[in-house]
Image (cartoon, rainbow, N blue to C red; front, side):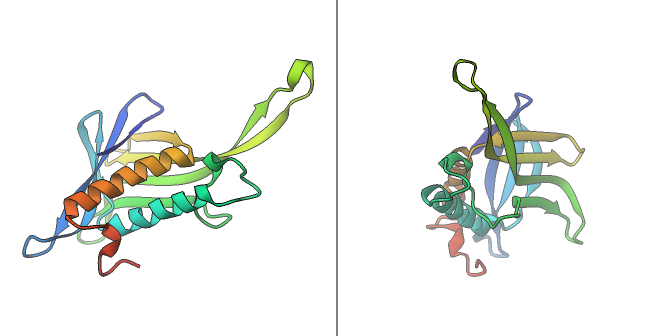
Length: 177
């Protein structure tokens, strides 16, 4: 079960739960969110393939070379200008969004690095993943992660999704890209 320590000190647990077809066979996952052990929301119906794709993307971005982001902790997948890595919501059968949300946006943060022995310092840009969860009542949680921390979190979700589906990967779903 993947989990994150949030900025307010609470702990957000994200657990993949199997979606089952009419004969009871698991075919994809939905995510249950718990805040400090209490149900917080259910989001991301049939999101396993997206999580598997994101896990590969984070690993590739960290392993690759990016001139703008020399530190691997600042490297995330996606194209320039794409700030959202995922947004999972709960949708009712008639398509109304309610009951929770889990999203991840990238943000660039300037950090001041002081100079040595009274010399002038410099600004250094870092990138971080802001993972935010919202319950149906509108209360939000936020965790700020490096790409390494995001990779560990997503890898744990994918591993648990694989286990609850009883196969090699949620990306093997016939409808996944």
